[in-house]
Image 1: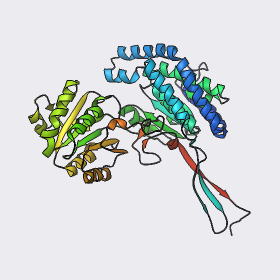
Image 2 (image 1 turned 180 degrees about the vertical axis):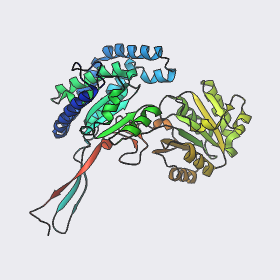
Image 3 (image 1 turned 45 degrees about the vertical axis):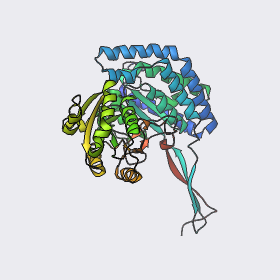
Image 4 (image 1 turned 45 degrees about the horizontal axis):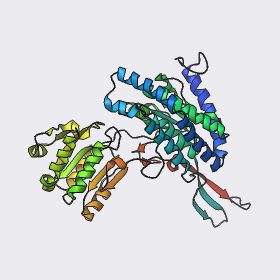
Length: 429
């Protein structure tokens, strides 16, 4: 049995640790589920204040995480996802406040009807229960995930990667302090106290205690979770997002959206990775886009027709169309109309987020109907693929699954329902 290197209980095995955390989470969740909405709201507001107060400690911990990542040869894109600044910490705290402002997702009457025998049946929203969150380099996931789970009445067991382990620890301490101040159990939010990979395995088989697993990270992590978990998983694998410039696109809109979708922040899953352009409009739309992207330092890879327009475009190979770069690299392909664009997205896309730029409303409607992705945009950047931008306060991730939740997963998507049946003494004949 693997021992927990830095567990609270000396000599505790990973399995024993997971059993302890799970029991604590289940107990805390029962209490949380019975707490009034005002108590959960108060806890979230206190969490935002505690997090801001911990800025110096969090920055110090994050510097250690970043130094370790750089020492291990992490890429600039990876480090960008890991780095915290006072501004980013303030934004995370503000996200907790925004979650506190959300309508209470619990106790909502989703449907109600009467039966001929007089039974009154209602479908009512309730928490999922205990949610395990497995993530890698983004320390803000600690607060976003725990905050959304708290809003929806769920306890959380967090397993950050070794890259963000110290930063996540400080954030969890701030959240736990807020929970106690609000009269709730600190164990409502817990971090697995080891960066050992065995902690992931223990969480994935803790089906007695954990109701849902949400992984956030690279393809290898999510593939492992999907293969090994004995618990339902809510996930997405890749963010291979497309922007399609239809022949009716306004050049200014095409330029602004294509550049923003790629370069606003290249390391997020909503960043565009492929630009599709109608062949009939390529000479009119592409030169300005290529000039701007090249000036911003974006490496461009394209098909032969696109390379013929500009020698700065490198040749794209087959792998480029299905690659999530998460970096300043963009593949460009010219297509023969909207059907070809839809076919390309269907073959190479990851069903995450795709956008059309078009003035032709018929083309927009055809694209929206034809693209089978969690998020489909018309005349807007793919960088809006974000729960905060959807008015959810924050998100626990973007789900490309088809069951339970799809797209940005906020507090409302972290609930399930039960049926409440009221009678007047009926018995079944």
